Length: 200
Image (cartoon, rainbow, N blue to C red):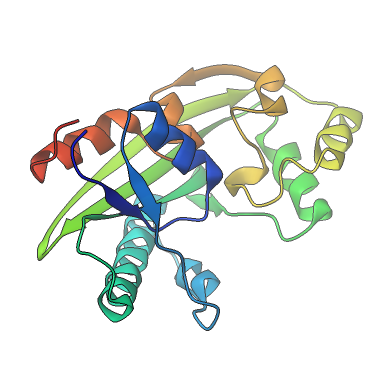
């Protein structure tokens, strides 16, 4: 991979995934005065795919403004957002343990979708991609759900679980992009980087 990109994400999993495919990157994180959470508000009757693409676009716009104001060297900027959808309902990051338990009890024994949108901008050129995967959870007992939530792993994760962690013990089947479920679909991301002239 030649050159580097800015990753406008606080997710350690996205950093790990970029490192996996040899993409040199620097973090471009929100300033303390920025209300990053406000960008993730769901609009009324918004479809999950439309939501995750819109939020990713807003994050990229904020990151480009941040880069311009920072005086940092120019480089492509990468943003991504992941959401879990049960039917048309969007399951975001749980606010507390009770909400995490509720989400997991609804996902248990069901198949849901995981959508990750990726947006990359270099100069004025922007390219985007959307990864959609399906995940089926095995049935979980209330005690299993409580124990998983008590581990702390569900917090800060869409749908209250991390595919790469303890939740893997309950994932019966998945179809699609494992890295996309983690938060950054590597095939799609590499393709976007190549579209902007980066060797990857």
